[in-house]
Length: 206
Image (cartoon, rainbow, N blue to C red; front, side):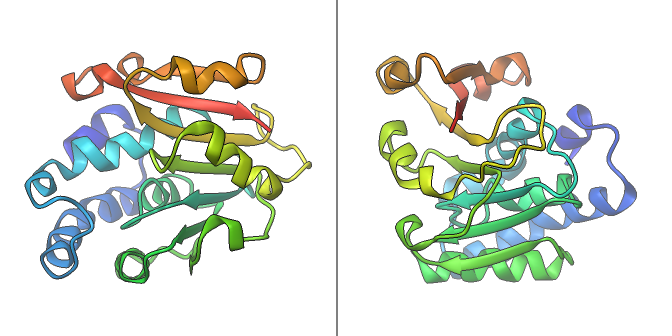
């Protein structure tokens, strides 16, 4: 929790409370339904919550922004972002019902009012959003192909509508088709912990 406060000192008391509740909730649910690898649950804040919040470093969503989290798993990056941006609307989708159940239960337990959930593939979701977010669900060109239909034309943020996703490793080949519309961010520019040295954020205008 100190990690979140270190980089986001402007949190309200409610946001601090919500972020601090996540540890016990995820540990409890993870013991029943494995949404985070067992050995990684102790790194919840470093590897999952702060990682999700890298998107908040790339763009501060304006109030009223609608965001879809594709392949949310147990709620990443959607739940940390929904806490961070209480005036925005988040729609979390995943094919796997038990993962969506965990995300729903956790959102409910911390009193998040700005999230909706759907068990489906992204192909099935027809709604429009200002931004799509995700964490390493599939290669970039494949993801862009599937979500292009979901991006609204109406602009309200500092960056044009599109995709913001979190990935690791060498992304040169994946970024090739998006040379003119894509931006690669080094997460080590945002967070000093060693874990972030190889982590990237990708923005693609759509």
